[in-house]
Amino acid sequence: MVWSADGRRLASAGYDGRVLLGDPVTGLPRHRLDGDGSAVWSVALFPDGRSLVAVTMDGSALLWDTATGAEVCRLRVDNHLSSCSFDPRGDRVVLGGAAGIYLCEVRRRAVRGPRRPGPSRRSDRSAGNRGRGGSSGWT
Image (cartoon, rainbow, N blue to C red; front, side, top):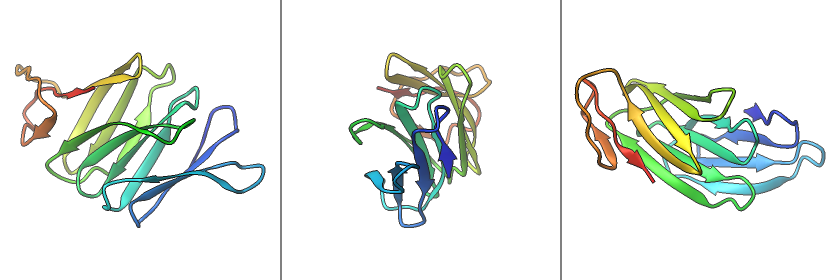
């Protein structure tokens, strides 16, 4: 579970594959965000509270718009992800787990990543088995 920086939103991860985005004053959910069905291990809110990222046991990272509840983009890697966090400025998100550690850049509601140190630079939608480096787009 995580609070937004302004204290106006709460997000909770669910073993049922859902994320609940709620109002901490009323205790009522604003949105129920359905993932891919795999257990959601961790959630993080963008510093301005407008976006949320969640990571799942099956290796998906999902980005949602918190105002509408719409999924903005999805990234898949070949192992589970168990943690995620935005940097304080909100222009990067880090994803971690058995799949490795991935740093993704977030710009103008589009995400580029994951990036891992290494000589390879690729551009496709799945990180696959590229634990040795590479990147893929979240757009």
